[in-house]
Length: 325
Image (cartoon, rainbow, N blue to C red; front, side):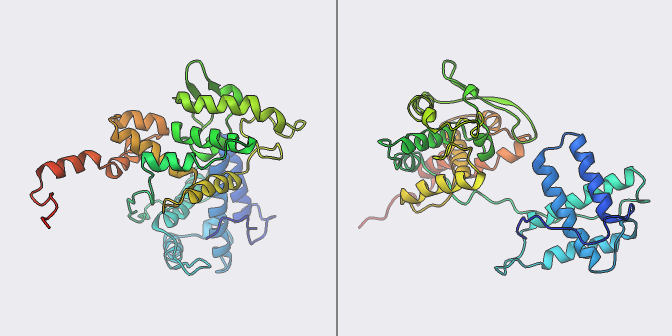
């Protein structure tokens, strides 16, 4: 299910219809200061249900029963994307979570008599490790792939150094302002990160040095009128990066390093957490760096970081030594 802006099917003028109720739900989320991403995602998920229901002659939320909601859950399970792959169980759950939030709002505001999705059990999700994590030497290879003899190379080096040093998310990187970097204290402020939470993080001296060089030597020449706003990192056209542009940029350096691994911005997030954990950082500090609301989200890195386990294995396992020639 590609994330596309789809138009809901039905009568938008029906005050009790699904389209009208969906729009009121989105307005309610915006009024409660839900993030733009949450509002957009839930709207898209609800529209998918509305279109599925409309194809079956269901046009009002009050017509939806628990068996109908369960049928939709089975539909998500059997759905196949254009490439023939099924939806992941997490994607299926995302669709049902949005639907439950919508019907919970409908029930609380007396638009329906009860929430037909309240007792539907979500799928058991898989706890998967990150697809790839760089070693410290591999991270250096990627960073050193930049050509710092050019202005764009200096900018790109500053971007990669920032990602590696802080492990911030792609959108957090794109929203950085020059004033968010405190070179003297060696800190960076992440404003309105995931969950609309601010946090302050340490940033390494090397990353700060490259950011300062970019700000002095490169950024002034990229500023064009007021198109750039006040974001820190700018494209060669003097505009803020689009998310896909940043992913393509970082991904190109990972590919250019020829280390046999793929990834982009999130690859550096995984790498930062893993190398810090392997070097003795406590899991609570990693949680603070990553901005995770729950420790269980951070604990996945304890399964990636196996250096200590490897040391114990080498010291205690009877088959640890290489066979004699």
